[in-house]
Image 1: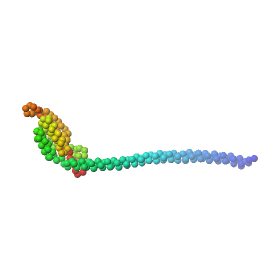
Image 2 (image 1 turned 60 degrees about the vertical axis):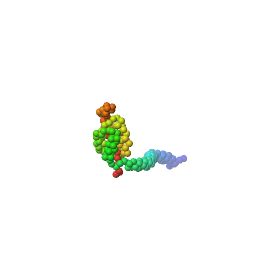
Image 3 (image 1 turned 180 degrees about the vertical axis):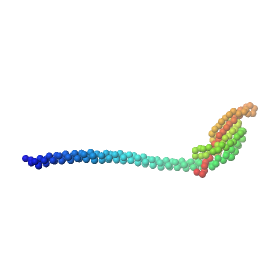
Length: 188
């Protein structure tokens, strides 16, 4: 027969095993599962950091490309800018306009420099001009002005009927022009 101690021993073993199993389950629930969750969270953070790093690498590659493209455009701009006159040189432009109008037979009634006009990357000087002549003379004037060696732009052209010219053949046109001439700031 099994003695009392033997019975107690056989009762004690399952009880001890039960306590150990319960303690292991509690340890797993309280310690192991939070560690697993923490590991999963760290895996997510690592994946996000890798994606962010890939974006940074792509940005760096594009930045270098864009910087090279920008520098090439800047060099090209500097070359073009040096082709513009350093100042508006209004006296020579006014003489050119007067010579053209005289060759065509237009009547100038007003030349008026109107100051500097802000434009992107360059500077422009505005000249207000009033002229009188036939339609053909005005178009010829504008054509010849467009063929000057410098860049000249007629920004505003206002036409008004004028008086009848010689032999009642043509009616004159009064025109007002706002002419811009561009120049660069060579100082950089």
